[in-house]
Image (cartoon, rainbow, N blue to C red; front, side, top):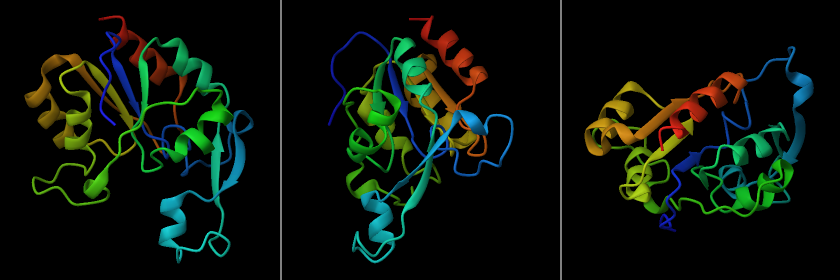
Length: 181
């Protein structure tokens, strides 16, 4: 899918890390998350390709994230290896409507010749010149530098800890960026 022509900025959202803090340790925020045992396609393929034989993947989700993301006023887009499966497995838990998603095609997990994250070029291509925020746990300085050179100041690449997931501080940063538009 390609970006629609809405005037709202895009919020390109990864699942594993920001929404599913897979590195999370038990702690004071643990009660905000509910665990779900899921079998997304990429997970099943990595475990033999037979859904009934693949182990379930524990996915921890905070249902408060859906309303908080919606309240940002951005056009939400899945930027995750879950692709359209995020609409079936993640969105309903968070109370999100069906969202557009980036189809990674051949770029899925393919190394970038310049050493960028494998998603970076596809994210920029999807945005097609629109202002966007990309929320992911694997964003590096090289990605920020390349995207800034390609897109200018109308973008936010925001890294979220895979041990913590999205926090109130992350929402504050994103909201401050959104207010520029």
